[in-house]
Length: 146
Image 1 (cartoon, rainbow, N blue to C red):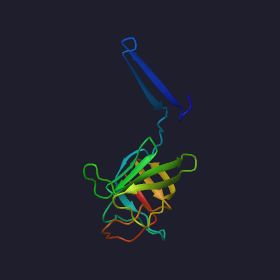
Image 2: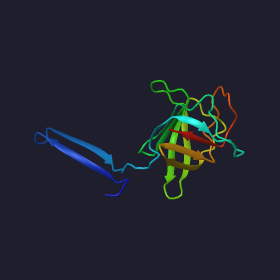
Image 3: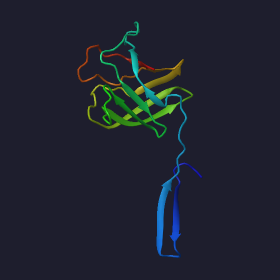
Image 4: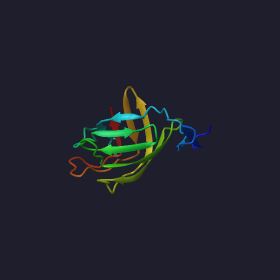
């Protein structure tokens, strides 16, 4: 069946004593190489200079196979700074993040750019996940995660 199809399943318990019905939406999990838990190791400056170690780092960037993502500077239990959905084109490496909510959503997020995975590193270019609540390093134009 096609992704997005809703299937209704019914069960007849003890010849009609109880009828149970539930609806399920069919989805196929994506298998992109960006999926997983990532920790920031470097940022890419806008002027093309050398990458540098940011302070603070993004402690957790998560891409799920459901098309959802989250960003957290200091992971703690179930806290996330912000979250939303993403679209990713493996052919062009184009990544678009759409923020849908958060506890702390930076005003300067640039959620469109490219994402590539090489040698266990995820590199986001021409995009910015936002400035931390108490930033020590300048705004940049990309991120490197492991």
